[in-house]
Image (tube, rainbow, N blue to C red):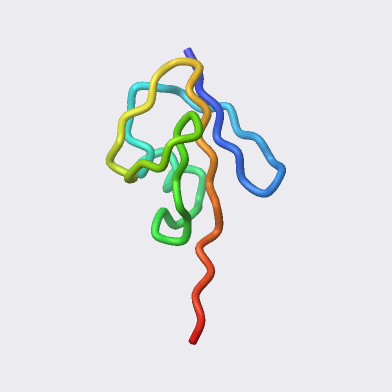
Amino acid sequence: MTATIKLNKKEFSVRDNTTIRKTIEKLGFSPSAYLILKNGQLVTDDEMFRDSDTIELVNVISGG
C-alpha cells in the first residue's frame, strides 16, 4: 500500500502506516523546512498516514 508525497512538482510514492516525519527524513529532507498538508489539511509531522493519502510539502519562507 502506498501514499503520495508532493514537493515542488515532484511526486514520491511511499509506504504508508508510518509518521510523516520519518518518511520525509528517509527521502533526505528536513521536516522543519516544510508545512505539511495531508489531504489538503494542515497537520504536524508526527501524524500517521495511510494508503491513498496525499501529503503536500510547502516550503517555509522566513526572513526579517
